Length: 180
Image 1 (cartoon, rainbow, N blue to C red):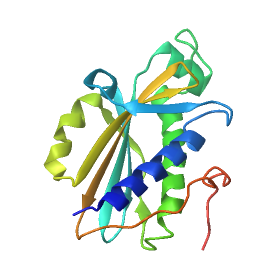
Image 2 (cartoon, rainbow, N blue to C red):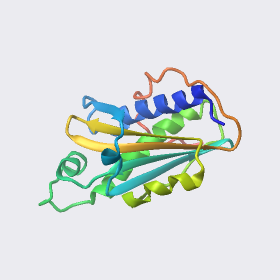
Image 3 (cartoon, helix red, strand yellow):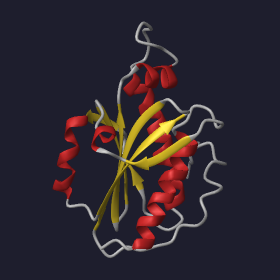
């Protein structure tokens, strides 16, 4: 029930949000490639949700608690003690999801975002229980050394198709809170 324009638009919105919000420095690259089973699995899955009356998008970011990832997001190595990686990374994931929400609200004014939460990486096979209309996964490489996985799962309640505008301006906003 999801059209090809909508699938393409969701992907472009996610790619732009990830490139601007999952990096610690705007100069760092965020590269995407189709996910292999090896990359798609992580110790943790950060779950972020955007819902409307027509659809629900689950963005699952697969995170391994390795030294490169910990050093990139927390500034610490295994020997350092501080905030847990999952707690720190959840804030980056929330910014990414918020950026996606800002782009989607132009087409769907009734959006809501959930509070991000972490699950075990073992939960991924259960996505099929949601009966999604689209599931796509990618391997992300950030700043040449940090490896993440991402899965975009879209469930629709009615036929859905739209075309998102050019995503070039997605990085201009700092992801600040909006008050109504």
